[in-house]
Length: 108
Image (cartoon, rainbow, N blue to C red):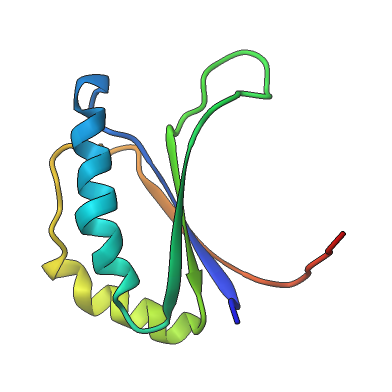
């Protein structure tokens, strides 16, 4: 059962490298992270509609990793991070990541 999510907000370094960035994320980086202990699933989203007037979204992409065990997942990510296959198509200057623990669910 998913107990938390790790949310990663990212951008490619340029629109010209968008396809390269998505190929790397979907084919290399995502599978590397999902293979770690404590992480169940990855779902990615692209910004579509800005509902706040007055500008473009800061981040173009959202990755949501479902986590079964926060301590295990964070330990595994920390140990694996130096060995991740990274790409210079990722804009490291604008990326952000936060773990959110589940506190409430409401179903229809």
